[in-house]
Length: 124
Image (cartoon, rainbow, N blue to C red; front, side, top):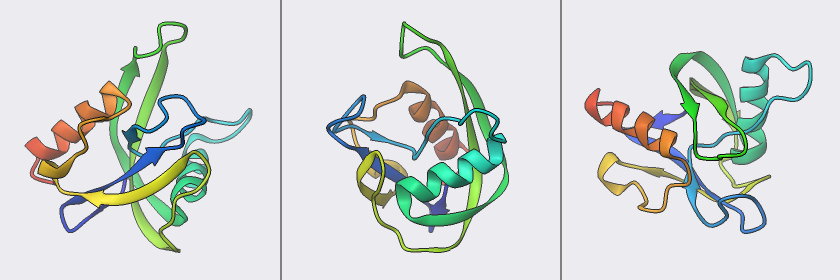
């Protein structure tokens, strides 16, 4: 997760991927034998064009939105080190949103949990 000026970076999912047209916190999956922090850096770069430094774990939640498979999500804090903000990979749009501007069509219930945690903590 990247937050800038009390705004959180979100991405709109491409129409050809699951939950297409909906918004999410930039995310992805581990490759086989990939270290989880390196996967987060890779996925964030692929989806947003930003190279980030992982600063720590923000949240961990079980994901129950897909009844065929339960997953675990880990939300990391990230500080941008470089790159150019642009949608890529599974996203068609990226942008920063204040807490009261979060799109209504969020893809994942756990992203909403994390966003609510950020709001309660005064981060966004």
